[in-house]
Length: 500
Image 1: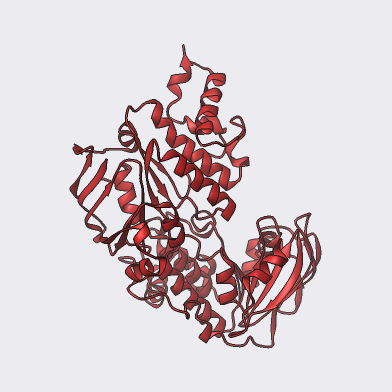
Image 2: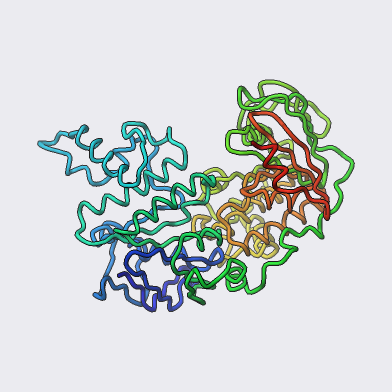
């Protein structure tokens, strides 16, 4: 139905796509996997009309297709559900679903809001969800907003007399298992009238949902397999050039924590979200906090980072009692936060790599009250080499980097600032298996240097594999403690019992 043939695309001297060809057949889900920087996003943007290839051709039903914009792609039945979401949070659900297509509800310059809301309800009914179309989108959960994105893509059915092709760019990256199951059920039901290209770093999910899988590496398609004929470990080896091994979480590098206590909470609470939290974090320790959404673990770590106000109990940093008034005070005390939404909270996307890396400690690159840009670039260049950040130079804007390289820039910032306490809030979310392994190496490096790390992770496997100890939270309270020394790691089932 839709095909890309010999597509090439370069940016700033970096060849993002090299002679890429893929085919999407009718009524199928095509999986697209690869490491960060492999070219997946560029290929998706080419198929959606936001990027014009330097060479190669697109065809639709065997006929040449030239896409000049996303509106052009939509006119040919191609829609995209974005990883970072394209919804405007201050508008209602109905307004977002028909954003840019309002003219069909206007007459004599007046908007028929009732007709728009009724039409939006019909779109949501296609995917079997019940969401208030008059609600502001910012009031919805991330999972609900993802469903709105899918409904928005399906509006193309009303204006295109052909089956749709819907591009799903990391739609599950911040969803719970239950929400993922709901999304997958919707996609399977919609296969009768649409085809999908599904990008994900979670190989088990790709195999679960897809009919065929393309593997990309260094801007090329290096393999194509029927999903039924390949396993996740095999895909992992094709992607990163080495097999998945038992040392994935670098447990052999897990050293005992030091005696000195960097952070201590006693009877700590944040409003109604969490209460009576007692914990200590030692130098060199990786302390995991496990729990389901709503358990209170996010509120604990955000309060430690100065983003939420402590309402009860005591917080000590390096033995001194403090009451944080904001993130800037936390930074001054040596607390750095790597947030889950790195593109929103972790980086200033239009600033360069160098500017982002030095942002938390400008004093280190100041001379006579002015920023020494030569010194700033040198500091960033050192981190570019040490962390193997893939970029032409340190002057490239962070918005042009892959997710894994963006995450490395955030970590480099706090390492530059000399943070002794790090809050890692889902640090590998949206990263491929190779990039995750590099982050695990960084965690072990920081631990060996005496940095104390609080870890919130996407998976229990990652939490258990990386941490020295694991705390489990439920309904705003700590319900269990587990030691996680190498060779004596707790069982996932034991953690789940304490979580639910």
